[in-house]
Image (cartoon, rainbow, N blue to C red):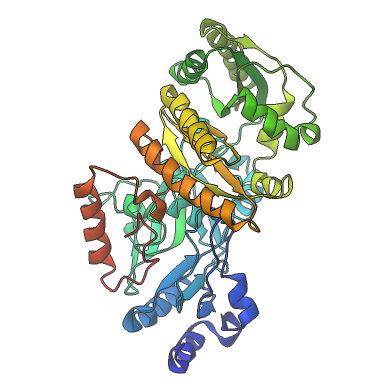
Length: 468
């Protein structure tokens, strides 16, 4: 990288927060995306304020240098891999937290992790009740940029449903604030849909391709202290799917619902069953692992009885093994860490959403791809929000076996095409969905127009948003 540009960057953030050392560049060349090749950036900068982020972006924009925003680095689909010759802007120093208790909201800097905020809010009997499996390292800004979901999404949906406003630095260095806080006289974040169109939503799920999120304002809720865990069994997939639908139709407060096919559950328990203390059991064809949460014990008792009634109405039975959902829920902030040590594979993952009644279509697509390509895989997912099931199928490979890795990459592309035809919706519109998307030309043209208008020099994470 040009020495004059490096000096400009160093003058902005300080020498100690600017680096071109090979060992540092190597650290930022990869993320938790184990199925993707690493890329060395030209430089890494670590600004400490929004104003410094803006000044760095002005330098990059003027010189047309590609920029990759990064915070916790727990991305699994290559969203934070840098461009050759580009700059990584690491945001972990932006770590402020400001609670607006009367407004039931909080504003956090881009470097604040789910774990850090959860610890802070717990002292106030509050929480932001969605936990990605990498919560100990995942930041809110990064999670908003991918519209993430996780434990707690059964009631509260994806993180977008909790966002009240964003502070964003545009590619040219302009700083904007969305939501009620756009008014400089605002007492704080209390309304997202303010001052015309929903500009907040423009940046949610944008994968850092339209600007850099430097602050996130979110709803907070009273912490649920009363929890029940149970498992429910079904012989037919349509009955299990109807159970998912009826849980929501009856307003049962299901923080976590994961539906497992028998073969998949056995594979999963081979890895973590002993550690979770799950007893040996002849599991049915389909098992729902459920955690219900409430702020009052009488509410919880009502939901527990309703869940049993719904299960039996749908042709199922209460299994009664509580260790599985209990450990899944209590493990919610370190799921990614556990999955990294319980097996030695690398994997490629394909997040997507289906309506609960289409649960079987994703499962059928995954099995057909694994069988046809001769690869090993595993899938899991959870109920998310009003009427969605969030899937994350994983295709495994040995990174030392280049032939197997090539098969997995082709299987990954094949699976995306098949899932799209089932009606699935991408959780993250990463580049690999580009080949799968059909009959959406006008929509994709609109995305390209937005990208070109906001980022005419195409410096922000080029190519990451659906290949744009």
